[in-house]
Structures are given as C-alpha cells and as structure tokens.
Image 1 (cartoon, rainbow, N blue to C red):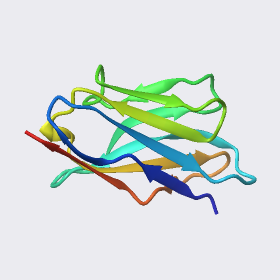
Image 2 (image 1 turned 90 degrees about the vertical axis):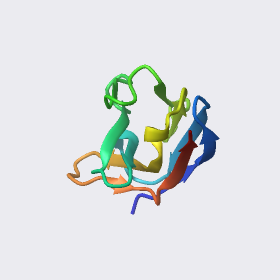
Image 3 (image 1 turned 180 degrees about the vertical axis):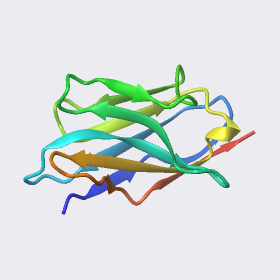
Image 4 (image 1 turned 120 degrees about the horizontal axis):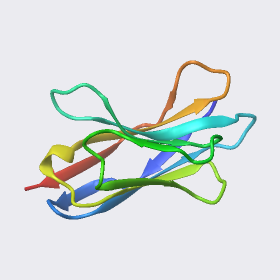
Length: 119
C-alpha cells in the first residue's frame, strides 16, 4: 500500500504564502503522477496542480492556481512541493495530495491538510 504524508498547511492572511509538501512511501511502486487537489466548502474537489513524475516533469495547473502556485519535485524523490503565493480567501480548503501508480486506475490519497486564508 502506497502511503502519502502531507505537511505545511495552516492559517495565513490574504496575500501571503504557504508551501505544502507530500512524500510518498518507498516501495515497489513506480509513480507516474503526483499532485494536489483541493476540497473547498460547498464545492467539488478540484485539481490544483499535477506533476508528471515519469514524463519529463510536465506540470499542469487548475485555473485558480495558474500564475500563483508552483509545483515541484525534490531531486528525483517521490516528494512534491506546492508553493502557494498571493493566497486568497477562495483558496481556503483541505488540500489532498494524490499519487497515481503505474498500472493502476485509482489514485492514492493523503490525509489532507487544512489551508485557511483570512481576508
């Protein structure tokens, strides 16, 4: 079973920054993609950012993250970071790290980390 450990959430004022991290457990898995989804109150879970671990580091962002957030990988490790800048109240929610292992159809999910942006 692949396990994901997240950290870095918290409370921040609007305009501030936070960095989230997500580390996948070692094991037999080849991870093709890692990234973050967000669950905001009253909204469906939405993609924030994704990193292609085995496709040259191609990244993809959700509309709300474009230009403000940046996803990166730690030196060929199964760890990704989400740098969030110019945070807005609308960014408030629970951020879930996911990983997609090669040959599998469902994502693995972290426990979620709360991000609260005060206006």
